[in-house]
Length: 176
Ligand code: ADP
Image (cartoon, rainbow, N blue to C red; front, side, top):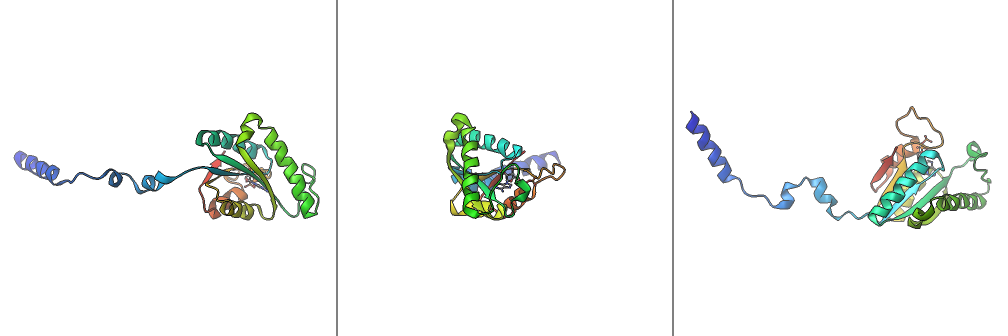
């Protein structure tokens, strides 16, 4: 009985072919071999959570030698945020004011701001604008906060964050 077990074990060892390195690794790791993070899109609604995500993104960008694009989407109608960010109803001036807020946010980042190569403002539905900007500007990664100005902390993810994850064609890193 004992000798039969030993015999079978030896046979098994002899018939196993050595695997090539790439065959041993899981498919996800193989697929990740050529990943380069050069351009990171950071959408912001100027909330505390978005500021935290931006700070994280700037450290991340430094480590990966990547460039950050900051994006704010002006929602229409804008009355909900009227006091904090009194954006005019006229599209162009809303964009100009938003760009001013973005430049100020950039300046607040001190030396880390060197990683911010562009600030952009568009008008529309935030999740649509964010995912389409990521696609057209060929961004490698979106870094977004779990929550924003609505601040419904009891829900796991805000609606923009959730839709960006669902519709983005690039990886999304969610910061909480
Ligand atoms: P909440 O429902 O708590 O407001 P959201 O999903 O709207 O949460 O916000 C999550 C994150 O999505 C924000 O921190 C911000 O990074 C991004 N975001 C939300 N609205 C906008 C917007 N209008 N423009 C750019 N980014 C936005």
